[in-house]
Length: 546
Image (cartoon, rainbow, N blue to C red):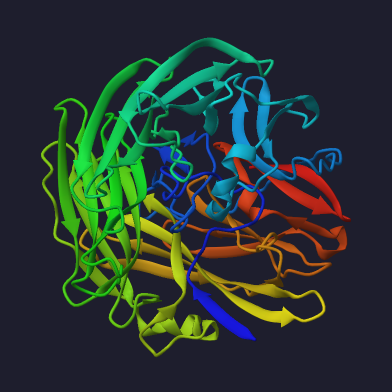
């Protein structure tokens, strides 16, 4: 028998996770808030390395506490249980209603990227009343093409797809919009054309939105035959699909030594790619053997620059990148450890000016003993470390500070040889623990830290009902989650204000026999959340308005 424990977040098998920026990049489903108005990213969330949400901006000052808010809840009729398309992602809303994307292959696990050739899609439109308007297969009429991403651009659904020319050894990336009936509409736009040796099944690009949603970017990576460097091709276009900028830049490092993590597009159209670089092919995350690298493309200057983010004698264990459009900065924040690559001692903060590329030093702040004592049930390695926490989203404050929301997660696997079946049998044990929220000042000090206590355990389900959904509603971080992963569990909602004040209430009572699917939920406007749920074993959509 073999038992193995994987520490930290992994790509989740649960329904509703979205594709990554270059497959190794995590998707962002965060909702952007700026000057009190919400802008919702029209896409799902992360994957291969971890879940990272593009930053949002708090719509309140540091001293605003706010008040509790009420909500309206509307349930759809029971959804049809389509066994051919069991996986669901909520794309977002338009004037027609809410667009949903179903697939025969999970959106949330890059281990299934090998299935791209057999992946199929079903596009559905639900009205404001949550009644189904239409449901039809999503195709592009091109046998040699691969659908890379689907999202809402402007006020229409758009398909991003790639095609490989074997004779010319060219990889081409196209985008086209759909009409309100779900059929292809308008012109096909070539956004990127780059040399490639083959169709890269593992590195499909994503749609990356600016905070104000006026600009969209996508990027592709190709590796040379000698595998000595990597070529990144980036395109930036507006909601009319007019390309406003293209750029190719090389990273003179082998693919084994540099991996992209996530990316962000500012309102100015500047593109930033954050990755991790290793000194050796052993890919060890020890101090001095790895560091984060930020690659910046300035649209107006048509310039590319690179900056290294590192801490001497400390492990950088997790990271998030955010576009601070108010202060015209890019903020990188994350966790560090004094001991190992999977524990956390405190937080770090780093910023870069969009215009002048002036950068601040990497500054850190350790967790207080009071904060650590709140999380004693999580099982720390010692009194100064947290175990298995990774960042889910980053929130930008108006003063340039950042708030981080993270969750503790690990999975254990057990395998044994079944002599009767003559095969190996595997079981997976999922544990989703506490949520933590931290607010970091621009000088690196912690303004406040808080935690949401939960303990979710399940077996062989990919964590389907586990974890939580996070949104920004009326200037507060709102988190929705199942209290337990069991029958007759209540659904809870915890809010955290801009000064760290926390309040928990029951969203669905135990008597409702309801469970939510947190990974698949989406904030579709400034005060509305759309979330898949189950009630008495039947699948539903539930709309929560605030």
